[in-house]
Structure formats: C-alpha cells, structure tokens
Picture: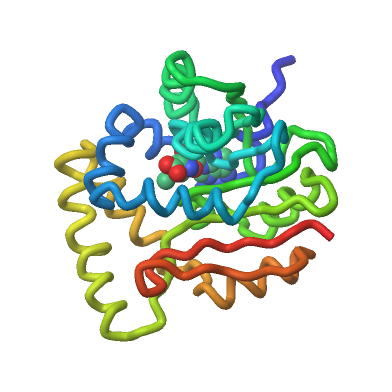
Length: 241
Ligand SMILES: C[S@@+](CC[C@H](N)C(=O)[O-])C[C@H]1O[C@@H](n2cnc3c(N)ncnc32)[C@H](O)[C@@H]1O
C-alpha cells in the first residue's frame, strides 16, 4: 500500500491549486519578485530578520520557503545559523536546492505542509515566513503549528502584504496590486492567472490588527507588527511563552 504524503492529504482544493500555481511560476519566480517590488522586498526581508534577532548557531525554520530567499538572507546575516526551509511545492524547492549549492552556510530543504509540520515540538530557536500566510488554507492552524515547533522564548516573524489603513493610500496601492501586478507578473513571471490569484489572496486575509489578534489567540506572547510602506506591507511577530 502506498501512503499519501502529509501535504497531499488535508489541505483540499485550495492547497492543491496553490501548489500547482507555484509549480508553474517557479522558474521565473525570483525575477518576477524583484521586478514587482522594485527590489524593495530585499530591504523588507532584512527588517524581518532584524526583528527575529536569531541567536548565534541557532536552528531556524523558514516556512513556505519557496526558492529560499529568506533562508539565504538569514545565512548571509549570520553564517553560523542552521536554517531549514519547508515548502509543499517541489519545483520551488528544486530551485532552492540549486541556489544552496552556491551559497554559504547550513541550509536544508524539506518538502512538507505548513499546516502539518514534520518536526518534533520545541525544535527551533526561531521561525520566519515570507509572503505566504495569505496562501495557506487555515491561518490559525499554521500559527499553532509554528508555536508547537518553537522552543520557549523563540520568535516567529511573518512578512507579508497587508491592508494599508489610510483609504487613499490603500486605493493607490490596490490599483498597483490588483491592476499592474497581474499584467507585469504575466509578462515577467509567465502566468497572468497566477499573478491575478496572488493579489486576490489578500482580499479575505485579516488586516494587520486582526492578524496580530490571531497571533495572540494562537498563544503567542508579545504579539505585534511593524507596518512598512504605509501599512501595505507588515511584519508580524510573536514569541512562544
Ligand atoms: C509567494 S511564495 C513565497 C516564497 C518565499 N517565502 C519568499 O519569500 O519568496 C509562497 C510559497 O508558499 C508555499 N506554500 C503555500 N501554502 C503552503 C503550505 N500549506 N505548506 C507549505 N508551503 C506552502 C508555496 O508553494 C510557495 O512556494
């Protein structure tokens, strides 16, 4: 009898759709990212890592690592770290593993679902997630899973697009996000459908304050967030008690 991998069991249609979509855009994902954010995502990633403040020689988990951007940023910040990237999309992980060949530091990549983490409780000294929480089927379940695998006192930092509180700025940003991103993503990333889905995934996602409250509800201590770009980007954080 063959067993079904965890990440193909319980995430239903949205999970399968998201996985296939990322498989399609994997070859040009990095280029599209840089173009769509005008390279600013690199700066936001550095801010997220500064908020994580990982301990030297620590073991970190990057959830939904994709092609490994945050993993390699973490290792460039501190080559003594041991970073595991987890993603459920094999083609994204393939690219991450190729990049790992040319990078310094201890990076490992694991295929798995953020909602069913294949790790023992209290394994990691910190966790990160970049531009992904919007894509998971059950945000609360992921928050609880991350908490489970963190050691007491360790921090989770989540960088993502958010909903700007200022209505005029939100309208301007939405014009770009919902209008230009599908066009540019179609041209550079190779799939207009995928880059139409990605902005739409924000529509039903909690706003920054709601997400902070969800961190708290999941059991994080000192839950908070740092708004960037007038709140169109937010870095949420919280620690395991
Ligand atoms: C927008 S990409 C972000 C990649 C990377 N974190 C970055 O910052 O560039 C979203 C990633 O989340 C992954 N993903 C979405 N839902 C997932 C889940 N439930 N478990 C594991 N990976 C997931 C996708 O396969 C994809 O690689």
